[in-house]
Image 1 (cartoon, one colour):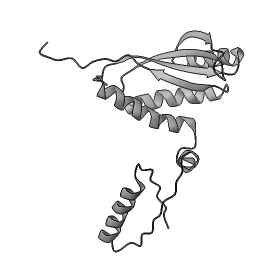
Image 2 (image 1 turned 120 degrees about the vertical axis):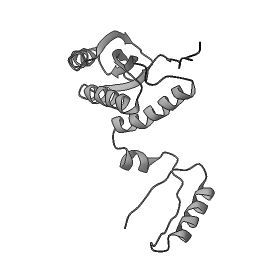
Image 3 (image 1 turned 135 degrees about the horizontal axis):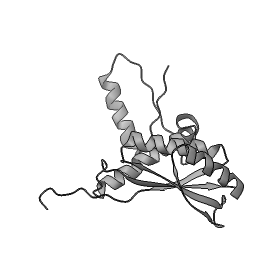
Image 4 (image 1 turned 60 degrees about the horizontal axis):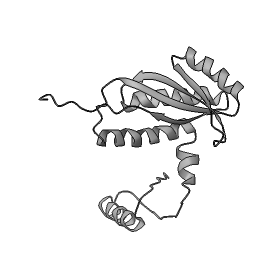
Length: 166
């Protein structure tokens, strides 16, 4: 038996679509149901068990927003990843490791409004292809986790597509 999970906007529409599918595929026995799961617990615990994998989902959303804003994803530009840590010492240890893994180091900041108030930016150059961004964020997250840190966010300047006639 195999189980498949779907998160949808409309339970009614989804169940209707599954009923239509069941009518077309008579060789398989299909049963289905629904459950209200506002915190997406199954999604976070079973399908995306760590922060790096969840970040790849967020990356897709960010890249889609940039594309809709007219970004030229193939243009290489500076990415800024903001990392946060429990202490300044852990941040310093992370900084050395990040530098050795090819990241340029930005300025550290103390942000008391955050639970992990010791932040710093790291930088690298990249185009905005999903595989490249996923690899960069995954590397940064795993490096930070070794020092009890997290990726707070990543940013990139918008690089507009150029009109060849202008």
